[in-house]
Amino acid sequence: MSNTEPMKCDFHIHSQYSFDSLANPKDIVTLALKRGLQCIAIADHGNMDGSLEAIEHARGLPILIIPSEEVKSKQGDILALNIKEAISNNLSAQETISRIKQQNGTVIIPHPFGSLCGFNYDLEKLLDRIDGIEILNASVFWGNGKAAHFAQQHSLAFTVGSDAHFSNQFIGKVWLDLPFEYSPDLTADYILQAVKSKLGRPGGRQANFFEAAIDHSFRSLTKLKGFEKK
Image (cartoon, rainbow, N blue to C red):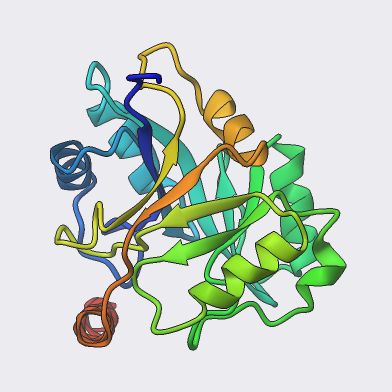
């Protein structure tokens, strides 16, 4: 039996560069390391600023940061993993996916059946264009079970994400185990190829109703604070 410790990855975190988050990218990296994560994707709404700041901060640390963005298409949110330049919001899902692919990025549909945040399009029509879906999101009220079933039904690759918006207990609440140890030589391409090959195993548990309700309340307050600054 192999003694290899699996690599723990969280593919969906937000920083203060999202309109509904207050998390400092440096604090995210520190907490991620403290909680045993070795690969994270900071995917802010409509920009890559948090991702790029975290990459600079994490140089020399035993963690891989995947440059990412959560793009809001006209049909719903799309995670653009391992991209080089930010992609505009409010494009069609098809155009958003095309722009991610033009950068050789990975297309993941987050919380596809989540409460109040599900994808407003028939995913079966996009099966040949997306790389996978998120089957375990720590902060949704419901929808993870349906996402896991959909991925299994269509033999889709999948990711796991805390969807953390603050430097709190959500970071490291869920993760995807990959069957190899962290190495500073690992690249985002290697990690995402393992994901596409369905080598990962979900870990952790989603928040209970009260934890999620409190988290979403803080997100709403954060949105108001950002509005007041304008």
